[in-house]
Figure 1 (cartoon, helix red, strand yellow):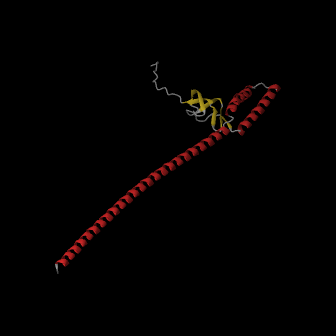
Figure 2: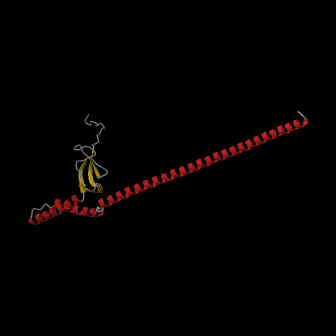
Figure 3: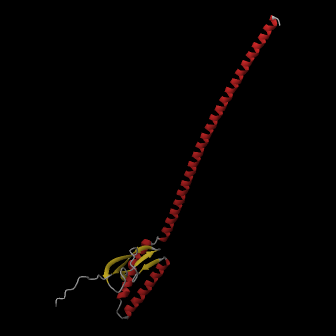
Length: 212
C-alpha cells in the first residue's frame, strides 16, 4: 500500500468516526426531545387530573346544595301543610271560647231551677233544648267537654282549685268539678276546675293519757 492509499484510508476512517459522532448526537437530541415530550405529557396529565378533581368537587358541592334546597323545600311544604291543617282545625277556637260562658250559664240555670211551677217548667224545657242544640253543634265541630269527676288528675287538662284530704277516693283523683273544661280537636280550650283528693296525713304524735 502506497502512501496515497494510506492517506485515503485514514481520511475514510476519520469520516466514519465523524459520522458516528454525528449519529450519536442525533440520537441524544432525539432522546432529549422524547424526554421533554414525556415530561410535558406527564404535566398535562397531572393538570387534567387536577382539573377533573376540581370539577368533581364542584359537582359534589352543587349536589349537596341541591339536596339541602330540596330538604328545605320539603320542610317548608310540610310546615305549610301543618299550618293549613291547624288553621282549618282551630279556626273556631276563639269563637268556641266565647260560647263556653253561655253553656255554663245554661247549665247553672238548669241546676238552680228547683221551683215546681208551669213557668219554671217551660223555662227549663227551653233551656234544655237550647243546651242540646249547643252540644250537637259542639259534637259536629269536635268540641269536647272535659268532665273528669272520679278520674286521675291531669295537669294538662285540669286545674286544681283545692286539695281535700279524704279516704273515700285514691289520692290525686278528682273529687269534684267546679267548672267543666273543653277541648277543640284535642287542643285545650279551657281546663276543668277541680278539687283533688289528698291522702289523710297520719298523726304519729303519741297521745298522753292524762288520767294516768
